Amino acid sequence: MGRFLAGALPWALTLFVLGCATGGRRPPYTDLLGDPSIAGSIIWEGKSGPEPYPSWPAERKQDLARALAAVDVGRPAGLEAPPNPILPIAIKNENLDRGKLGIEEETENCEDDGHVFYSAEDAWALFLAHVAHSLRLERDRKVAWSLRGMSDEERSYLLDSRRLQKRKDAGEFEATRFVMGHALSWDPAIAYRFLVKKGLLGDSPERTLFSLTSWASRNLRHILGDETYQALYGYPGPIPIDRII
Image (spheres, one colour):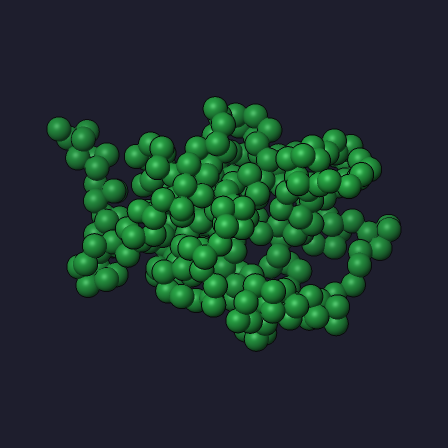
């Protein structure tokens, strides 16, 4: 009985925090997580393959509940800093799976130093941060668009771990330019706060992208051939967004 209570206590406290946030009403994310289109789009790439939220074991759902409780009080939902790289990191030849990436035209394989490997624990925390952030924006209507109005493919960019990182084996994940891109979004709240502060958040995803790319054309420059991410930003992989902005 004592072991059961010890295991149940964190979950009970999480529910208490979520309930208090709405004055004792049911947890504020119940409706979102009960929506089949949203819950089915929250996918973690586990050891045995893709795992949608409804099939997660209780401990994984508990981890997401903690992440949601954190974003509700303005705390990081996942990592406190970019994931710790698994060293050494070397330039490698990236073999493209064009079908998986949705690439139809011919694309040459290339050597790429814009990647980093990190632990499954860090990958899980990074993924939870993205899901929790998206669900909070949806619940509080912080953006003019909605997860419910998106197609399954569009939601996958926000809720599917395979759009963020590549599972290499049971204990290692990779952020690479062919998945996340050249910038490492380890805490999506950082990018959101930047968009709000600079007045770049528009009334549609397209207008927001236009505003952001216009800002980038005025304020960013391309990395030069003899420069490295490590030397410029102190991180041997895709550039952490907070270190760019």
